[in-house]
Structure formats: C-alpha cells, structure tokens
Image (tube, rainbow, N blue to C red; front, side, top):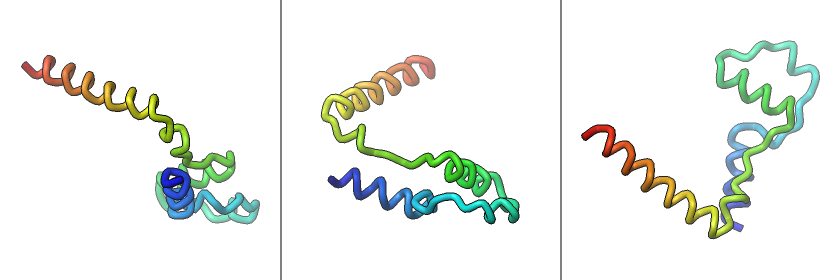
Length: 77
C-alpha cells in the first residue's frame, strides 16, 4: 500500500495523473524534461512502483546492488 501511494504521489508531482488534452500541443515545451513528460502523458505512461512490492523482487534488487558494487570495486582495483 505504501508503494501504491508513492506511485500516485510521483505521478501527481510529474503531472502524469492528468490525461493529455489536444490543445496543449499548441504550446511547445520549454526544456527537454517538459518535452519528455508531455510525450509520456500522450502515450498514457505512468510511474508504477507496484512490482517492487514483491519480496522476491526486492531480494533481487539487493543482490544486484551488491554484485554491481563488487564488479565496480574489482574494476577500480
């Protein structure tokens, strides 16, 4: 439930919770991030943290993090 609330908050903060309206196309975005967010809204993309709620997924993320740290430490040495 926490990740669902976090997903909704992120979507609201990025403006992805509002559907795309055609009249918005008249005003060009000011910078690349605004252009990317407009493209995501057109496509109907949303941020979803729900897949991270599974314990197995979280375990793989932790394992991946430590493997990445090991590889980077090995490369630097």
